[in-house]
Image (cartoon, rainbow, N blue to C red; front, side):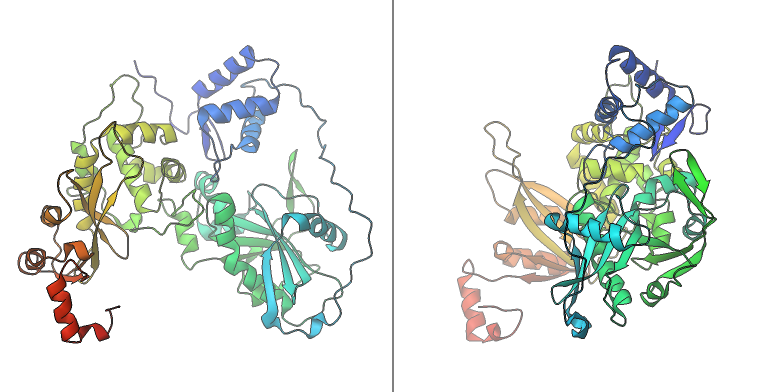
Length: 539
């Protein structure tokens, strides 16, 4: 019998950082505590993260979120925890700054033009000085940041003039949540795409007109790219809280930030939220025009755990899913390679989620699982996911490695080709050998693919036989693809008379081929007619 978990609104369930805890999870935690009573909270959290494969975008275990989950479960009486190693309120001591002279700006720095202003991340050997200056000269002081964080320094002529610190966004902020339009569950999945400017300091003695707004503008230009490089995901919105009794927020307004409203004057502590009596103005700055729509959309924004941001192929929110001709109808023909016992997610829902994740920019099994975890409940339901949580990375990996890849690729490629007009678009035909795909004594497979230039979308691909080359495989590759009005590009291997006739007469398409020494007569004719003297020709 298959054990089914209760729906998300059932009593006893708890959600922390997009992780939904079921009664089975609680029973597992109790069993681990019984078998390992000597484990600390950190060791218990690390073991649970390994079992659940609970990771951040950069691949590290989410130990802080797991410890928070355990404390909330213990507070509700679902489990017991080891005694804490430190008393409540204890903080790791911050190293004392080395003795040195008081900060003073470099002579003549105020006369330098703002065109020489640069904003860059703080280097490791500069962090102690950076922290010391923030602690000494910012009115709030500085100890540490929470969650994902990046520090910056602004230099003018190589001299420090300003410091900035970015960290995780505030969990509760009514004006921001109302502006975006998300609920608590969706916010838990998307909050990592928002960052908070927790510190901004113009160093003492520096008085340069327009410096603050210029620093903010330069920092915003590179912030998402730096965040992607460090944590594996971009940023869509940044926020900051300004004490209106001290500052009017002029520099933020000048840098294009938007005032959303005023907070209620509460701060987060270990005991919960307590009133500090100082309401602050909330400013936000979208990093792209459709940032709020992406954060509230049913489908997760494009995301990749790699160090390079991947551009999405198609807008998943506009693809037809249900009904005749939709993705879900197309995938009904897929055979499930698994045994029925213990199946929690249907093969149709797994392949549908993987397809949409790849179209949104995912390039690995881990990225597919992260994309699914950030989708709304409405989006997951439309993709056939009926359980409280989407499949994990190992589930995606096992199922996708077992399905018939050839049949799946052919059907999805043809379906995607129908979702966009190919007239006037460029279609590249190219072959590649799959590295690391050797099977015993057999050679690695060589695939001939047809893909759109702009979207990078694979329309069709075909394996080239061991005893032939790519030339006879081009026509079977494009037979089932409507490429009328498109421009097909290929390398010199495919510069063949029969291939050109096939594209123009049978497929009603155009072509752009490269002429090299494999066509000596044609190459000489081009030279004699002096057709190689203008682009796109090249010597």
